[in-house]
Amino acid sequence: MELKTFYRIRFSDCDSFRHLNNSRYIDYMLNAREDHLRAFHSIPMESLYQKGSGWMVAKHEIVYLAPANYSELVCIHSALVKYSEDSLVVEMAMWDEQERQLKALLWTKFIHINMQTGKRDNHPDWFAQIARPIEDKALQEFTAISERLASLRR
Image (cartoon, rainbow, N blue to C red; front, side):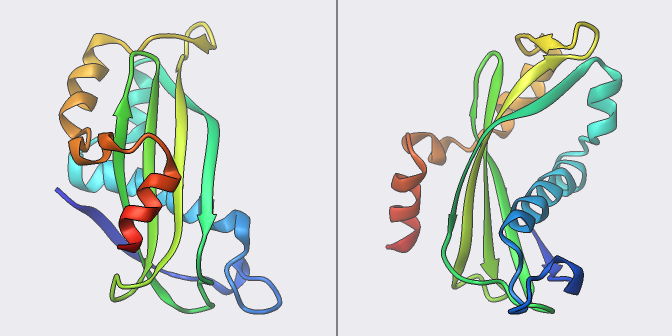
């Protein structure tokens, strides 16, 4: 299932050239991923936190390819690239409205945090049952964001 939603670039998120500020790309994409989990998989983040699981960003890898301009409608896709016992790698891609021009590609590694201890921990079994089925098997062939980017540019 392709997870995607459309967002309008807000004035307050832009620089003086009316381009989306670099740090705001990440905000838009992380917000889209949260929206996708809720809308397409019925997974509200607050319910995961209530069960004692949280995630922290360990690493962002982002490639900026084209500006997103003030008031432009963009399409953001997201997918779970890799599930492991204590982390997740999620891909988020921002496209133009017609989904022809890739504006930015982001791979984020999240580490699982046990909310009771506040420390890194393996995912609980109940979460594995949620995450494994939504892994995008086609994306697992890519070991680096550069490989994935090359495939999108073909």
